[in-house]
Length: 106
Image 1 (cartoon, rainbow, N blue to C red):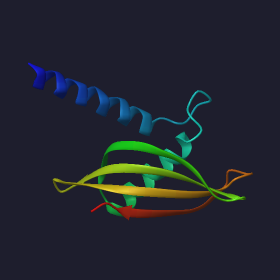
Image 2 (image 1 turned 45 degrees about the horizontal axis):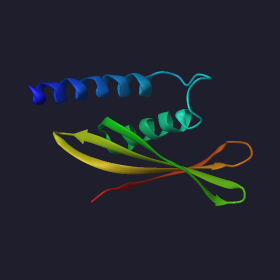
Image 3 (image 1 turned 90 degrees about the horizontal axis):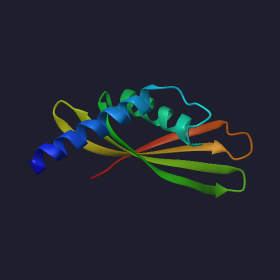
Image 4 (image 1 turned 90 degrees about the vertical axis):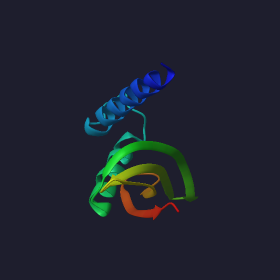
C-alpha cells in the first residue's frame, strides 16, 4: 500500500514538473523560471535525452557583474538515468544570457 502511494506521489511530481517545464514563465513564477526552461531545453538537446527531474540549486554571484543560476537535472536516455549540473551565467544588471555549461555527475 505504501509503495502504491509512493508511485502515485512520483507520478504527480512528474506531471507537475513536466507542466512547469513546458509552460511559459508568468509573473507568478520564480525569478529563475526562464533560466530553468533554458537549462532543460539545452540539456535535452545536448544529451539527446528526456528530463525526468529538475532542481534549482540557487543563484550565485560570480563577480560584481555576473551571476550564475545553478540547476541539477536528472535525465533518461535509452533506459539509463544520470544527473547533469547546468550552470547558466548572466549579466547581473541586465539579466542577459552570457553562457551555459554542463557537468555530468559521476
